[in-house]
Length: 200
Figure 1 (tube, rainbow, N blue to C red):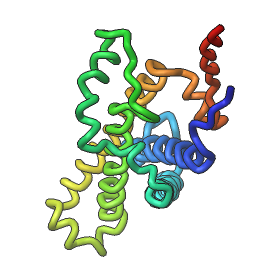
Figure 2: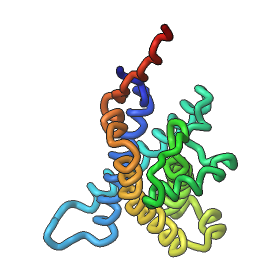
Figure 3: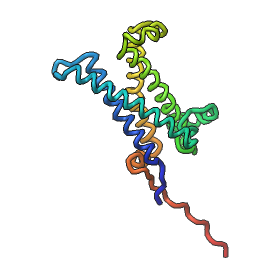
Figure 4: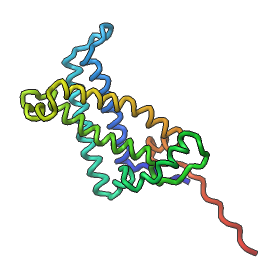
């Protein structure tokens, strides 16, 4: 029996974000320190970086609108009520217990990632705008401690994204690898529950 786990808009948001973040990481590292063995125009890398950043911001805005419109934001945001499940979540993912609690669509770890990614995109957009338009953001630069501080924050956000991707994959493969297939097809295969025997 097939069960729709990820509707088409969610899958599009996911893969656009993946492509944008990977492009931003690659181009950002190249702009920061171009390797001698790879001679590509820095202007091209800057252009790709800006396009990927714009795609990420628009994608996040549409993502927020979708979840607000459908009322499903509680599925992806880490809310105060989720903290009660953190202990059982850690016990399962640290292999202390074999019992997998039912958290709903996403577990507390995934919700923490989704929430922090949303905040990270906002921080990256603000600091990126300050770096891209230094002449038009002097007030923001003063507020955030200058361009050097803004560069450091921007780099830390990039490092956070790079570090969180393996953690995200760990959560996917530890919980239920079939859910990874659902991010491509939308559906996950579920075994039908056996019917109770009829009473004589």
